[in-house]
Image 1 (spheres, one colour):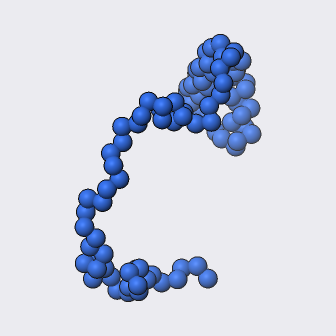
Image 2 (image 1 turned 135 degrees about the vertical axis):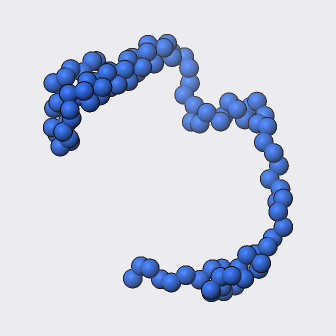
Length: 99
C-alpha cells in the first residue's frame, strides 16, 4: 500500500497542518518507507511459530547475566535530610499543590 501526494495533503488537512511542498514530499517518502518495512515483515513466513507473551521468555532459558541486587552505598538518609526545611518520619514534607 503506497500513499500518494493527495493522501498526504488530505491527512495534513484533517490534522489541520500546513505542510510546505518539500515537507509533504519528505513525509510521503518516510511513510511509504515505513509501509515498505511493514510489507517486508509481513512477507516473513511465520506458520508454525507460537507467539511469545514476552521476549524475555527465551532469554530466561539462556540464563541472563545480571549482577546481584546488593546495596553498595550506606544509608545516609539523615545526612541527606538535614538541609530539608521539613521532614517527618524520614519523609520530606512539601506544600500541598492540589486542592
